[in-house]
Image (cartoon, rainbow, N blue to C red):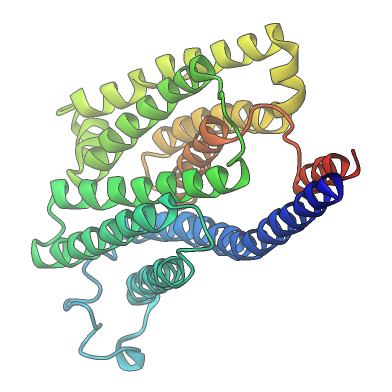
Length: 324
């Protein structure tokens, strides 16, 4: 009787655990899907913002948050107005999406990891700050520091969103490779600094002044100089992954994308300078590459560097325990 009672308790406990895992998995899947949409929307937001800056459309809508006092300014619509209007629309949709995820995390707080509502509250705070900077860019007539802060907060939103997604995917990791994360963090930090310099370069017109009059070239030269440590750090990561063969086997797609983006970013930068910054497609592509570069580095930092066991394996182990 005692044996049968213990066996029955184990079976009931295991069934409860399995049901609980499946229950949580359902909710976490929703957050993962919403997180993927958020990443795409944020990258689009950053690229459209770059296109707006390149096309000098930052003040195409003289008021905020509406455009010419209307949600959809048909009477004033042209390419520049459309870019600024669409940039604001995308920002609004991103904000609504993040607010929706935060609300769900509060409603389902008992069924999801404890850290998730807290991180979503941080994400929501960043959205509010980002919207405030968006308003200030219009009020302060595209002040350079305001524009720079606006972009950097967008990158922080992207990094935070990707880190949430990867932590949801790899919640079972107990001992991540700290040295691998630190190695990847170096080019991420350098890329953020270079992006900061790049926005200062465009928002102060330093690049045009340097190329046309050979003056105020410090910012442009610093921006070009940062390409060397970034390239070196990426090559060091690739060499390390080749040496640690398992890292290369499990992450080769991301590492290949990093190499491709690195050389294409350099090529786009050179083409932008060769055309005296008169070809918007090169500058916008440069911004897109930077966003993808940051996204992939962040993914590599927070993802499991090795193949993880899925829910099915976890459930199978539970069933083996019951059978035994």
